[in-house]
Amino acid sequence: MVNRKLIRPSLSDLKEQPPSKYLEGQRKKVPPEATNAEQYYYLKQMSNKTPMVVQLVDGEEIFGMIEWYDKDCIKVNRETMPNLLIPKHVIKYIYKESEV
Image 1 (cartoon, rainbow, N blue to C red):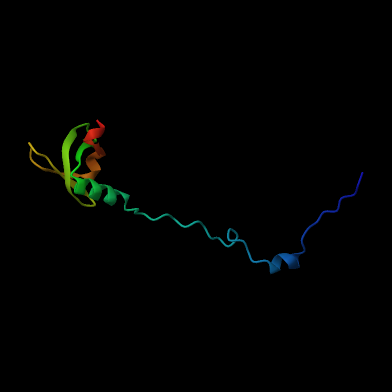
Image 2: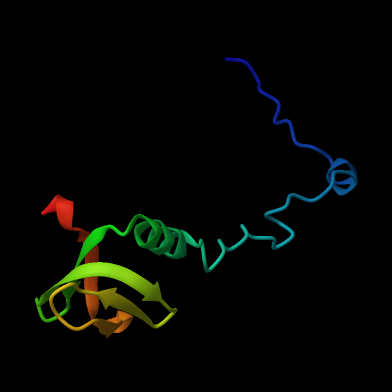
């Protein structure tokens, strides 16, 4: 059997090395709160005048085109019925009418 020597760095060697970023307490940066993906989607659908379906939390479906949007609500323009201003908290999801 062979004697194996345990190789350890000396304390002076460790003090000379710069500390690791994890040892300094640095963490990964938090991703941005807003990615602007929602605004991009709304603007694209508004400019193309895409017929959309807005599914509400209670199951009701509203058919129309998105005419305007805000951080809290969207305005849906409908041809045969009155236009609606829908708060975003009652929207379950939105999809294109062609995807039905």
